[in-house]
Amino acid sequence: MEIDDKRGGYSEEVKSKPLKPREFTWKELSQLNGRHNAHVAVRGKVYDVSSFVSRHPGGVDQIMLGAGRDVTQVFESYHSFETHKILDKFYVGVLVDNELPVFPPPSKFYQTVKKRVDDYFKSANIDPKIDYWMFLRYAVFMVVAISFWVGGIVFRESLAVVVAFGLVGGFFNALIIMTCVHDSSHFAVTHKPWVWKLVGGIHDFYVGASMYIWTYQHIVGHHLYTNIDGADPDIITSSLEVSDIRRIKWTQKWLPRYFYQHIYIPLLYCVFTIKTRLQDFLILLGQRNGNIRMNPPSLTQLLIFYGGKLTYVTHRFIIPLIFMPWTTVLLLYFMTEISTSYWLALTFQASHVISEVEWPTPGQNNLMQIDWAEMQVATTQDYATDSWFWTVVTGALNHQTTHHLFPGVLQSHYMKITPIVKKTCEEFGVKYHHVNTTTEALGCHINHLKVLGQGSKKHPE
Image 1 (cartoon, one colour):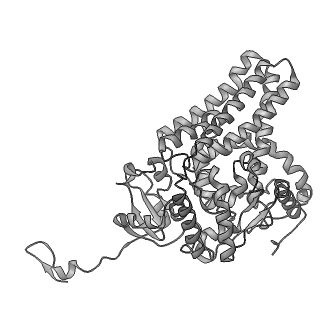
Image 2 (image 1 turned 180 degrees about the vertical axis):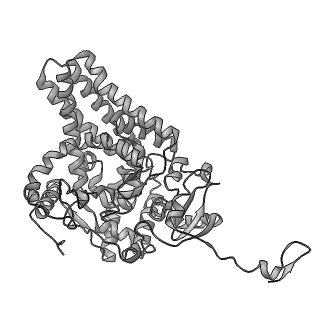
Image 3 (image 1 turned 90 degrees about the horizontal axis):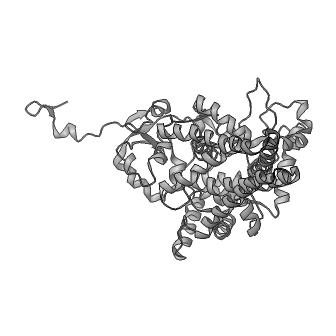
């Protein structure tokens, strides 16, 4: 090696020799998750984005959500493919192993459907994150839900009215979660991070569940690894040593008690929201949801977490107890929660937890053989997509395929772009799962419970 002693450095010959990029294991990357040292991986390359955190157009919380992990699918689904070029200046090395499943480069199908949807918005001069009628819908749902809760307190002398008001109010609570909360968690409500945080605050302070925890489960977990056992937190079941209350995957051991699960499990969905609120504490303590690691919460996130829980207890229990006995408070509360839970649980399950879609398995070294976008189509079933009514009352989750491919688009645009998705699937031979009615969709989930409950050991081809 030739050294230039006068300058105390290497000669031009040596200086021009490219340095070997630093190699990062996923465990090393996982430690680089603070604002001062934030690193992310995209397509096997590692980038030090710590100097960019405060300048990120999508906000600090959003970029910190991905710090210390492979964010390839998040990055590509929320940005154009050309945005990769911006990362070049932050390049510091390569990722040499994989914590979770890794997908091949975007297929021609994904590139085409993404371009066509982008072209639709440009040609129609529509902002995919703006729809003032949608914002009015948010307000109406909030006003109606709160009115029925207050009405249950005002008309407390009639238990029949309390029950009715609780059930109706609970349904509108579900709509709030499927619209305001869901859209803000996907950064689909305007282009302003402060708006996402403000609207998302409904989840903590009104619903009583943590947006911090929901975002990791939904954005970093479910949307990236849909129906992949061991990666998608939405299909977590108990370990082999402690059998789960339901059997939804073929990898689970069958037990006799599952035989009638298609009858008793739907009944238990009535406590879904209560379970979620309590589970928040366990997840915060353990800092992971299944195999999805969570970065330590900031002081602001902790204040919102505990402040939200306290506020929820105040407006759901403490204030009502001033006006009516605890038995009536519990009646109103449980009627509300039963209604909210049923609509949320059944709507969530109808698109993915069914036998009609795929349940992919990674290959060696966690490598997937299918493109991410094609997997989203394969693991999802839509229903009643031509119905404005069902699109509204399901929070557009009946357009689940479109939502998974374009999570950053406001849901009120889905009825226009679902036909583009369908047509592109047909052209590329990608099977698009769809049933005509909501009843059929819910039936698919109940049938799935029945099939697995009665001992099915293999996914139907």
